[in-house]
Length: 233
View (tube, rainbow, N blue to C red):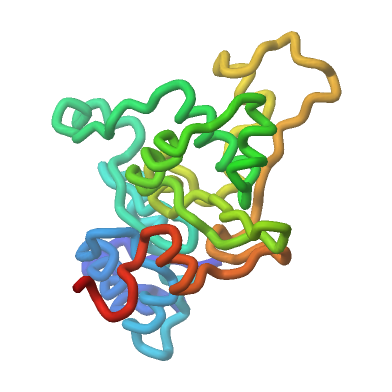
């Protein structure tokens, strides 16, 4: 078990393989990053001898009971206000546009069923989903276009983003609430059929599914997300 000397300097390790200098470097990189910083970027910018998992575990421990905590956001790290102090900053926080009930339903379906196509979203909801609703979710940057399904018509697939995980305080998709938690929060009726289940996606949100193809520049042009080659005349 790693033991840390609590006397100054703060990050000096005692009988530990965790380098205090490496912990300080990681702290500086996470603090200076405007967005959650990915493991790959940390590893690229830290010395080759860094035991990154051990360093981040130690940094997480050091901030565990402070006003800000080191939190995992997908495959990245960020400092966030401790949960019990968030109300202190609520007045100064910028609030995103309030989502309609339809947008919330679509966001939930995408989160739990990703990768999912528009047709699949409509099948689950039982009603047509407007393009405006999907465009709004894309504008929030909580939802993204993932790829194209290997199926007739090659429909676009939707999924969530690291910003979605960050917004809702999730380390990964596996942390999405299950049926019992949703019922306890009053978001699901307690009279649902006994066989009803809530899908819990897992894995890396950046990895394509076996039946997905990555979006190409041609796809992005067709979707209006990339200017045609040659520019605008």
